[in-house]
Image 1 (tube, one colour):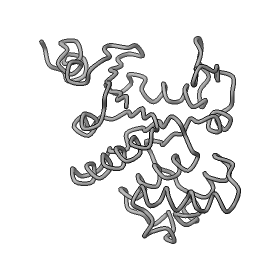
Image 2 (tube, helix red, strand yellow):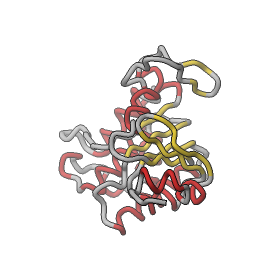
Image 3 (cartoon, helix red, strand yellow):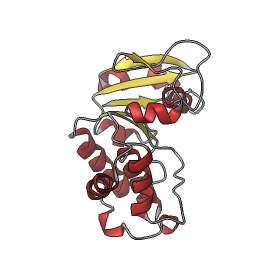
Length: 209
C-alpha cells in the first residue's frame, strides 16, 4: 500500500486525476499492469481495473446505499444483475454498510458517506484503488474505523494508493510512502525513514532540520 503525503497544492489530487483519466497529462504516460492506458477515457480505465474515491463524497442522494453501489457494479464492473447483487452485498458487508443498505444516501453521516465512497469504488472490481483523503474531517475513532476498512480491502489483494493528511492513519497501513512538493517527488521509500527526512520535515511539517 502506497501512501502519498504533501502540502496543499503539491499536486496530489492532480496526480490521481491523471491516473484516472479526469485530466490529460501534458507529457508522459500512464501504465496499468504493463499496458499503456494514457489515451483511454475514465470509464474505460475503470473497466480495466482503476477504482477511485473522491475527497468530497457525492453519492446519488435520491438513491439508496444499495442502489448507489449497484450502479457501480453494473456500469463499472459490467456485471450481470444476479452477480452484481451478490457483489454489492459483499462490498457493503466489507465496508460496514450492509445494515444501512436501504437508507437514502443523501441522509448518511460523514463517516458513512466516506464508507459509501469505498463501497462504490470497490463495486467496480478494481485491481488498483485510489483513495483521496478519506479520513479528512473524521474523529480519531472514525479514522480508526476507516483504517480497518483499508486493511480489509488490502487483505483481498487490491493495490491501494492513499492520499491523506491524517498522517497517523496513513502510517498505520502504508508499506511505502511518497511525498510530493510543487508537483515533483520529494522523497519515497520506507514510511518512517521518509518522515524522518530533513527535506520532508522542512517542506511538509515546516520544521527546520
